[in-house]
Image (cartoon, rainbow over all chains, first blue to last red; front, side, top):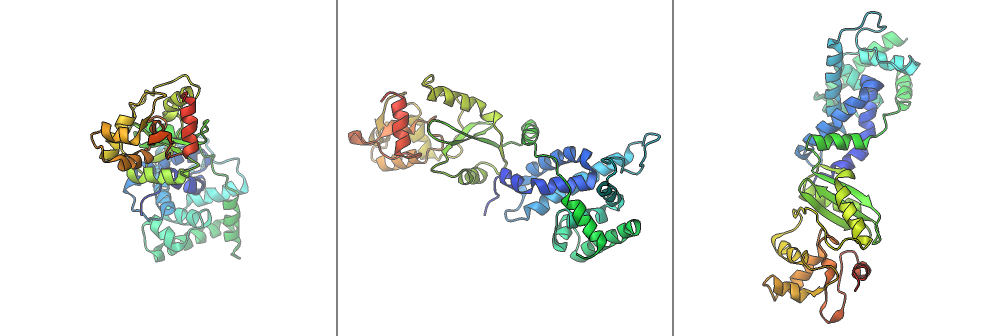
Length: 155
Length: 201
């Protein structure tokens, strides 16, 4: 079995990666993160083992780009008077959905990724474990802890 | 999923509108980073829809979609050239321009760099000779076999012509059967007749 043409993988998984990034870093940052994710994926693609789970692999790259983006933003000084210190300043008008994603973005990285992969990308616990490079039990735990924290804020 | 928070998350997830796919931006970035190993586009032509693929070395494939589905050609390119295959028209501009001129009767010779990756050593000899057959002229399979010094290899020559990955530009339609018959063609005999008619035969 050989790798399919990158274009075919892109057509199939582009939207999953884009949705993951919108939920994880916000709409404004998502476009640049997406471009970086897809270029990194294209660069590494010939080394991917044929038969791999391409969606989980692309989401792993997207997750790393999202982490980089969070780190960069965390280092940037927050202008005086900016409403939301702590990296959630990028909001699209404060709709209820955006507030929810804002709370998700406040979660520690593993919990944040687990919640997004589960509810935005509909991944199984096993696939989440693959993306987070941890055991399935640890993936369940991250998801559970993330939901518990969100529940505290949201009930 | 009866939990209200989970329902809330699922609802908010369904409402996400991902940024529109921007293939031009990705392709431009890929070209700049030297990561676009194969660029292709689909194009209408007087001989039907064709797929044109180029690499940084030159034209690598023209295929007739009526005989080869695009997926099959792209999979072959992914396997035999590189899996870094992107749909991206600008790198094929020069090939498309020259093909347009050819179909309009304004070009008799193609001036394109060719990437022979998909061609084996024997095919290279056959197609190398074929590339030099002038516009509007024809040779037989036997002529080509003799020209490359393998007079007994007329059948193998036919096979090599049949798997020409760059038809039209490498004019395998100018090689016909002895006795005035048309012979096979990668895009179907009808296409072969059409191209020879265009060239005034």
